[in-house]
Image 1 (cartoon, rainbow, N blue to C red):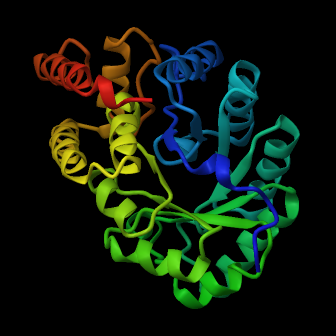
Image 2: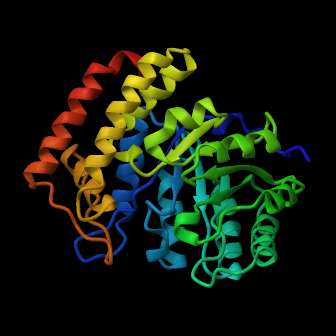
Length: 308
């Protein structure tokens, strides 16, 4: 079945939004607004809220709603906003989906039910309940390394019969999964590349865009990479992907990915606090963080001609 929605606005670099916290660990809605504006000013057009990068599973439902409300208050109508509504409980996910629609968000997305690792029929019903709760485009989120379930082609084809299913965020490691989902979904079905270190590979295999957790540390570089791909400058894009992937390896060397990304954003002038436990904080005063920040900024300057 063809999706019922116009999906062209989703074909952009989509930053997975880091949820800001105050020093006491509470949600900082002022910083949520500041970070929204920060990404808008960087040239980012699309945001993905309350997913893995947004520490969504460390937030209660009311906090998640407040994140969405703050973002929509600040950049609603100026940016495309996808809200991750996945929880362990279908009822809670449906409630978040209804709120996303009321807030004016552009789409919802969800992982399979977590922790319990239910069977395929349970996941199907979980996602169907979410799509029935809100008349918005819905994006399946396939991230088997965290959920323990890799979306099968059988379940995928069942979901394709739902006109609200507009695409999939595919974060599985094999790049050829993107090819399978795109071939089955068709040209009007959006496939997001998930693994940031292979963005170019995902795009070449059929991904329409990407959603990434390291984009926030270097949005300008991913915008430049996407521009090079669109201009068919693949050799230059390969060079930039190599640079980006090197930065990602360095990000992963710190005590927590979310901690170091937040530290880099703080160094760039937007204080969004530190992550919640069990994710560990990373200090912006760490010499390795400072050096990484400087190297990223240098790379941004080198590639500024290829940004939007």
